[in-house]
Amino acid sequence: MVKITLIKSVSNETKTVKATVAALGLKKIRSTKTLESTPANLGQIEKVKYLLKVEEV
Image (tube, rainbow, N blue to C red; front, side, top):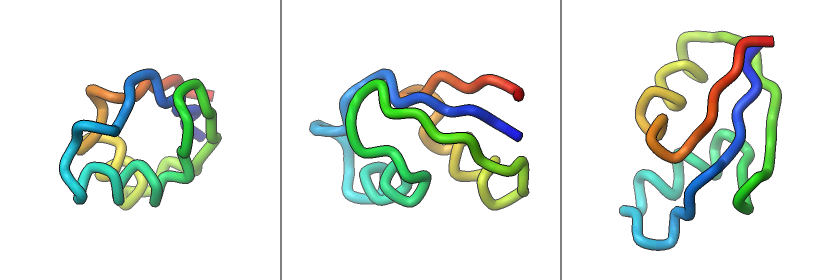
C-alpha cells in the first residue's frame, strides 16, 4: 500500500499531468489517497512524483 498526498498545484502543468493526477484520485492540494502498490499505480506516481509526497503504509 502507498499513501500519496498532492503537495503542489497542477494549474500550470500539461493536460497529461493533470489527467494522471486526476486518475490517481487527487483533486486539491493536501488531498490524500491510499492505493495498492500495483505496477500501473506506481508508474503513474513515478510520472508525477515531483507533485506528490509518497509514503509506504
